[in-house]
Amino acid sequence: MLLVEIGAVVLGLGILARLSDRIGVSPIPLYLLVGLAFGDGGLIPMVTSEEFIEVGAEIGVILLLLMLGLEYSARELVTGMRPIAPAGLVDLVLNFTPGFVVGMLLGWGPAASVFLGGVTYISSSGVVAKLLNDLGWTGNRETPVVLAILVFEDLAMAFLLPILGAIALGGAISAAVAAVAIAIGVLVVALYVAYRHGDRIGELVFHRSDEVSLLTVFGLALVVAGLAESINISAAVGAFLVGISLSGEAASRAHVLLAPFRDLFAAVFFVFFGLSTDPADIPGVLAIAVLLGLVTAGTKIVTGWYAAKRGGIGRAGRRRAGLALIARGEFSIIIAGLAVGVVGAEELPALAAAYVLILAVAGPVVAKFADPAPTPRPGTLEVSSEDGAIP
Image 1 (cartoon, rainbow, N blue to C red):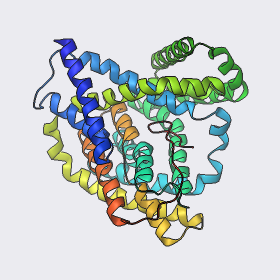
Image 2: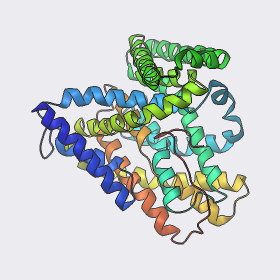
Image 3: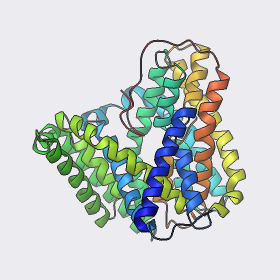
Image 4: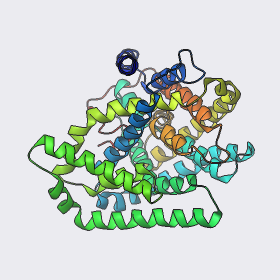
């Protein structure tokens, strides 16, 4: 029965991915809906395979963060924020604040509200990149501005994730402060080592055999993720640090080899998030999700408009830049997943699921109909991570 259930889930994901490609939308909402349908309270609750899917979901998060780290060298991570900092900070303030304020108004408390702020902050670069390709905007003047905002958000996650992971531990304020300090200290040390010795680490990991390279990088990421958890740092952060520690040929090869595994286990992660969310909880938070969606769609439009204006882009380009940033997806769900066990965050999974479902679908639709006849320009956009940097 276990193999039948797992096989049915994976086969179903393949069908949904094919369907999403045909209709031109992100598969993430469809994956979430599958999880909601087969979890407790769903149409056909799973019986035997939830534990397997839970492990697969954890591997999915590790691979997503590992691949994100592979997009940057430590040198790029340290220096990359400077040119886009003004627009990136506006993005952070405008889009983190609504989630945090709503959490406080709901009585969730500061810790849970910080997680909701993270959910509303970060756009889905996977969905955004697909949108830019589908609408023929890849050669437009505003596209580099959009990509710069996405890169800033990815870089900001390197600093936000350790803090969120420490907050998730709970306990006394002094213990939480100590956990945050330890997490940030480990991050700084890891960045320094990678900054000074990243090429050497890459040479040690890389091997002419793809099999050896794949097993080494994947195994190293799992070990470091496990060790990170043992010292109360998020496993996802540990995997990210492995990624940024590798550079050169090792990072390039690892990216190619791991991409199919990332896609598979990331899909499993979204399904598991849906499985762990009771569909009966969604109606109670749907109005809040819609309100947050409307507000943060507006704040993303303001973000894109401001960033494009700073870049000397005309009004039509500013509008497109803002519309392109509306969609939320991968990291919003990951942040909500980190909040499991946080006091006051019991409603967060349902709210995050509804919020992402709304904006992952509405973002591309609004962009398409708000600018129905953009001028196609030559050029294609390559996406090298689900929610990572886009060259």
